[in-house]
Amino acid sequence: MKIVLIGYMGSGKSTIGRLLAECIGLPFCDLDAYISKALGADIPEIFKEKGEVFFRRNETKLLKQVLTEQNGLVLATGGGTPCYGNNMEVLLENADRVIYLRVALQELVERLAPEKEQRPLLQPLRSEDLPEFIAKHLFERNTYYTRAHIVVDGTAKRPDTIVREIRVLL
Ligand code: S3P
Image (cartoon, rainbow, N blue to C red; front, side, top):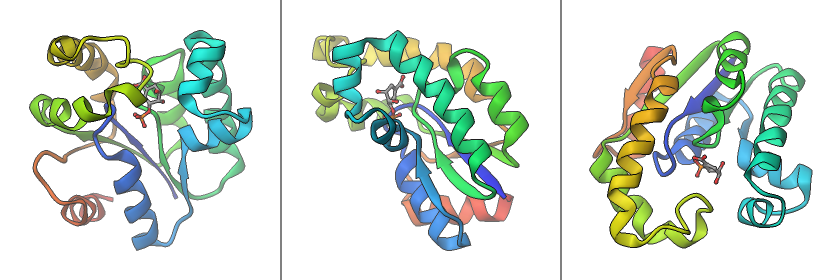
């Protein structure tokens, strides 16, 4: 069984994915970590040294690779993964379940504000511009995210509660 978690930065894809994988006995893969390992650099470094286009090209290539080389897994994607090229089609065709982990805007802003400097897409923004940027960005990305097979609301919930809700829906 291949299960993929998608959702905006800070929505908890990696935390929930790791927990879910442990509960159902599947290997867990974090796409950002997989990309970092394959390219020998961390994500902020890749953006800084090679640029976003290079990152997106490799993200698409490595997404296909990870989905075909594994028979069963829980995969946490990056926030932008479903929104570029034909990645969302690739996900829907190759995964048994694509799950959108939805978190309300206000909570995303609260989670992301303290992490701004470590996130290449948010780092150049002024702190006061963050809420408006995230609101617009999330609105644009929702077109992709809402094509998921399952939408789970993670707003104001503990990780174990979210995992329990997902398990009922699998
Ligand atoms: C990105 C999200 C990040 C990472 C990269 C780009 C995005 O992953 O892939 O910085 O475009 O939203 P997380 O969602 O795991 O933070």
